[in-house]
Image 1 (spheres, rainbow, N blue to C red):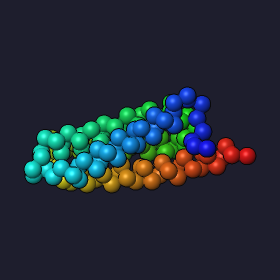
Image 2 (spheres, rainbow, N blue to C red; image 1 turned 90 degrees about the horizontal axis):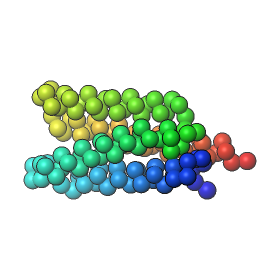
Image 3 (cartoon, one colour; image 1 turned 120 degrees about the vertical axis):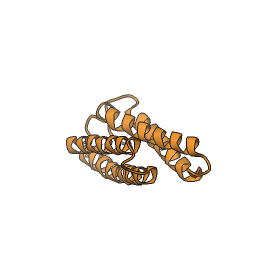
Length: 125
């Protein structure tokens, strides 16, 4: 059946965004920072941007999703942004920022799966 949403392309857009996040996350592992610094950093940044777009747009793509979950997504974006600033100012290393950001994104995806299943269960008669 899929995720119930009144948005005509909400489920599709969400799926595409999750795929993009996954592909970028895979590329972070494929291209080691020591050998491919620019490419590695580009796909890591792309993953963060794709995740941000997903979290921000989810409110419109799947309006029935839990409000607390949407808030958690914003908190995760804020933490990732603060970490990026700390890296840019030399407080954290790139590895530390990527590790925390990766854990947050994975945790969010796990929680998204649970929230999407709950939303689907709530709308199924």
